[in-house]
Image (cartoon, rainbow, N blue to C red):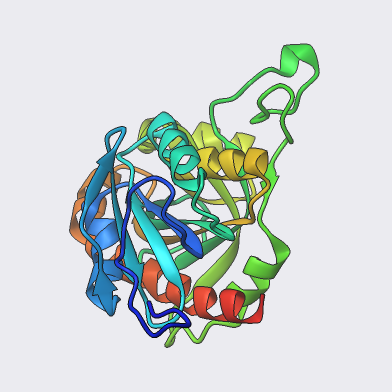
Length: 250
């Protein structure tokens, strides 16, 4: 990225590097579409187990973080990535399982809200899915939602709704109960709500964009393995489009 003196600044993923956005994926397969579309890619740096690369995307500078699977990995990586980076937004990208009965493999779900699937402090008067002291649900940033809605997704089916997150893979044994408890959930993953929680605490706008790789049920694991790469590509298409819109108009 060039600055006023015409000198190109090296792309550094070390703590303190200044970027426009943090994009978090759990797995390398979910990060690959961003690496392939970048005009410049910085060296990989590992920070607390998460892999980082700074990408030049022909406009925004993005810190791409591959955090590993799970809520704690996601929250830790996002908190450390935000520290000193100056990022204006945090985005969760990659794959998810379809929860909504109308959701299909190949769809993209944009999380208007995210909620913890396993949090239950109702005995103390909190809502199902609410961590005590935190919002019942974490609403996405309205500007990022609007930018996602305006993306030319090339014919992809993009749905907006609730994303459910927990550290449990949702198979046929679990999906019925979760659908009863969270009837508005369109998708489930293992990171987005933790990322939304972290962004909320940091006061940084957040949005999750997930491609559907499988439908929660009997063959979810088989479908996930077969379709995770395609789901990641679809997620990246929407994320890159909304980044251009959100960061150039901010």
